[in-house]
Each structure stands twice: as structure tokens, then as C-alpha cells.
Amino acid sequence: MKRLLFLLFFFSFVFTQAQDTYQKTEISILTIGPGTSLNDAFGHNGIRVKTPFSDVVYDYGRFPFNDPNFYLNFARGKLLYSQGVSKTYPVLDFYTSQNRTIREQVLDLTTKEKQDIHAFLETNALPQNKDYLYDFFYDNCATKIRDIAEEITNNNIVFNTPEDLKEKTFRDLIQENLYWNSWGSLGIDIALGSIIDKQATPYEYMFLPKYIHRFFENATLKSTNNKLVKKLQTLYNKTQTKQQQNYFNSPIFILGLLGAFILWITFKNYKTGKRSKWLDFSIFLVTGIIGVFILLLWFATDHTATANNYNLLWAFAINLFLVNQVLKTQPKVWLVKYIKLLIILMCLLVFHWIMGVQRFAFALLPLLIALVIRYLYLVHCYTKTK
Image 1: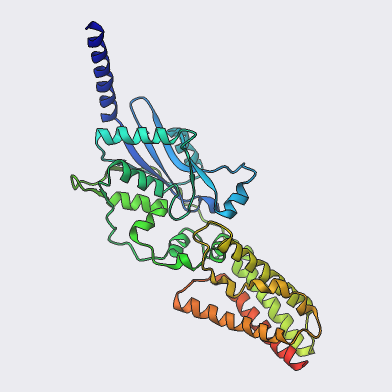
Image 2: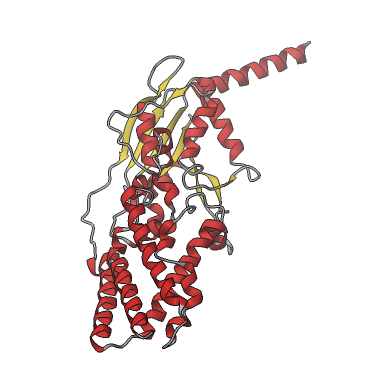
């Protein structure tokens, strides 16, 4: 009987201490502002758990950069990300050193919810549980935060849409954090297909860390109708610095030079009545390689955002297999019809752009115009030599 009473007393004491600990615990969402590199351009989120005995941040943004198969897995859309845990103040010091704004939202959770979310994160941090298959739009470091909050509260959260939220496509949302005349922006617009030009629902905005912050700020609890966030504070405010943009290294300048060069050679060919075969070989080779790359992203990977990519209308993959034809003085008769097809595809690209089926990179315009004029010249040239 004494042993039984001791055990009852012991477990009662432990339970009481645990309850007292989690009554004093704070669970908060950290939102880190954008950095200077492309992989930091969209910001970051983490969950801070501050107890009387510890203060740590859990996040879902760890990836195996040193893995020898990292780039292959990334290209195939099979990249595993991981949950990680770090002490809070080194994390804050790290992002402060990068001059990135850090905002914290302390959540209004019950004692049980605090205990449950801490237990969930600890369990999820175990080696056998920490990895997940990353998806940029639907399963990333931001959406994980939202999903955990909903799961732990048994869907007790209402994510109210901010009044000033504007309707945007997924591409619009991505480009909010990118300068349009940057190589990162150009690469994304070429690699990602028309599937990201569809309208995103307000709930889907939360694939970006800054919208996690905005929607949590406006969220309420179904059970009490109270705000989910009971305290909001800025732990570090970014020091504004003037961004140096080197226009001479920008896509619009480089592609503009390339387009002007193609036009100049074409004009020169027209005046002399000759054809620079090396230029046509280069055009077919490069556009063909880009086209094959786009096809591989579309059909040979698990990426959801690379499907239905109409950049194939200018980067036509079949060009790669016809490079020998444009080197001949007297090519096959059907080549003229093929080049006419390329011109038609360019017209279709304009139609898709105007109708909003897919938005293309503005920096491509000089190159696209030059390609159309070169193709028209080739039709003229081949027709004349018949």
C-alpha cells in the first residue's frame, strides 16, 4: 500500500509539474524576411518553443546540400527536406548577421495544445521521422507550420483572408520576391509552366513565409473567436541598404545584345545575299537544347510546377535534331515548311501570352523578336534559292 501511494504521489507530482511547465510555455511562429541569394529570396519560418527550461526553434527547411545526389534529386523533384531543431539565440544571431527581418507571433494556445505541439515536434525531429518530400507550393517550410497548427488544434483555426489581399497567380506570388530583370526570375519563368499561372486561393498563398505571417495575424479560434496571435513583436528589423543592380549583367541587357546581334547579322546577310550558316546552327542548337531541358522537366520529373510549359513554342526541342540541315546550302524541301511552323509557333506564343494562358519572361522579348525575323529571313532565303 505504501508503494502504491508513493507511485500515485510521484506521478501526480510529475503531472502537476508538467502542467505548470506548459502553462508558462510560449509557442510562437518566427518569420524570417528574404535574404540576398535566390534560395533565401522567399524568406523562412520556424516554430519557437520557449519553456522555463529551454528555448529552441524547430523548422522544416533543412536540405542535404552536401549529398552527392543533391542536384540530381533536385532536378528530378525527389529532394528530401528535413525538420531541424536549434537553440533560439544562435538562430536569431545568424539571421540578424544576414540583415534579415525577424518577426515573432506568440500563439494563444491551451496548456494541452502547447504540450501536444511540443511533443509532436520532438517526435517529428527523430531520425526516422524528420525527412519529407519537398514540394515548393504544397509541402515546404511554410506550409508545414500551417498544417501543424491546424492538426494540433483539431482544425480550430479560421484563417481569415486579409481585407487588402489582391488576387494573384502562383507566378505573381513568386515574382513578388524577385526583381523581374534578374537571372533567377528569368530562370523560373522559363522552367515553370502554365500551371503556375492559375489563380491561387487565399489559403494557398501560405506557401510563402510572409503570408504565413499575414494569415496567422488575421486568424481566429473557432472555439473562442479570439485571435490566434496574442502577441506580435519584431525581434530584428532589417537595416535598409541600397541594392546595387548592375544593368550590364542583367538578362534584358545581355539578351538585348544577343537579339541585336542576330538582327545585325540578318540585315548584313540580306544586303549581301548570303546566309551565315553558323548563326542558324547556333540558334537551332541552343533553342533545341533548352527545349529538351523543358521537356525533361515536364515529363521526366516529379515537379508539379513544370508541367504545361509553353516556352516550348520558342525553344522547340526538334530544332536540336535539325542542326545539320541548316548547315547545308541546299537543305531538304520540307525545311521551309518546318521554319514556317516555327513562325506559327511564335504567333501561338503571343496568343498564349495575351490570353493569359502563360506569362513569359519580359526579358526574352528582344531575343524572341530577333528569332522571328531570322526565321522570316530563312524562309525568304530558302524560297529564293529554289
